[in-house]
Length: 64
Image (cartoon, rainbow, N blue to C red; front, side, top):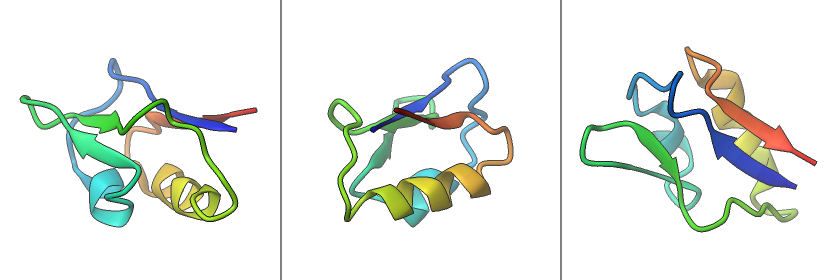
């Protein structure tokens, strides 16, 4: 599984990197970005789902 952020939708609220700073960071404009390649494991999947549920723009998705 892999987490991705749709940069077209992200408005930079920062909820993703506040909730899961080991999965997400932000760029120079304050938009969320995935750290690394976004691959999830048993320890990070729940954090990714939490961030996904709390994203106001629904910019975060989890791919199989």
